[in-house]
Image (cartoon, rainbow, N blue to C red; front, side, top):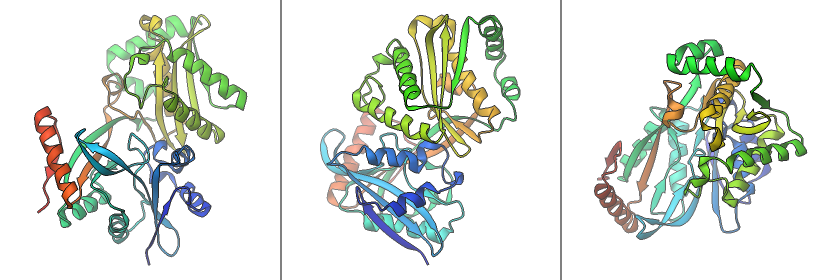
Length: 370
């Protein structure tokens, strides 16, 4: 017997949070899909945030959690619409279903989500693992209800399936392997460059570590970023970074690599872990040390850490060339933009279609409801 309950922040019962926290590693691909990240987002929600959670279960246990929010947005920067989207800006945190959930539960979970939605015109989903039962049934629901949608593919480079760091190193190109060995021999083994791993934090050491991170960040190329959702110099972004590192440090899930040159902190990599999954959250190096390859050494130190510690995967959260060059492993996700069948939803679909044609933007496929 399946049952479904919907909650609105701040009225999510502790029982639900506790059940969500007990979800095993099979529920997520990486830590930013976990309840810990959800709790950080919930605790930092503003008074005007319309954030909801759908929970589904059978007689014995919870089988699914679906966080979403509603907000007024503009479609194509023109049309004001009611938008349904994930709690977070990146879309990491979307519907999660237990691996053992039967197909009937997945179908009813999707139906309960759509039937429980307040008025909406456009939906921007989070990351949905490609070629899964959930994706198939989600797309089936859209088709059965004649909903227009666009679906795009996102790829995350991953470090996984290696038994040792030496095995991983043998898989990279001769150029990178030779560079790593040369730098290790010339700079790390001689003490010119020091690699430090931090995994245990008191309140004081965590604060000092974040200060070291920000000192590096302020002298990096990343300060020129105009993206207000990713630049750590934006107070809101740094506030979330601080809350996230606080949350994962409490349970031993924060890992920081700092590379220093002659005693001067030069590069960092920040990673998060939960269960047997890991993700690379932030990395930067001081621009003056560009030719010293300190960012490369810090990143390789992080890869070594995750492989030798036996993490199932290290998700790099993107597929930029400087990350993808080290691995041919990819996690593949689908992201759907769905338009309601009501008048505003149909208008938003036509605005979005026109914008895509004008911009020549590539999409995996588009489907028009019949």
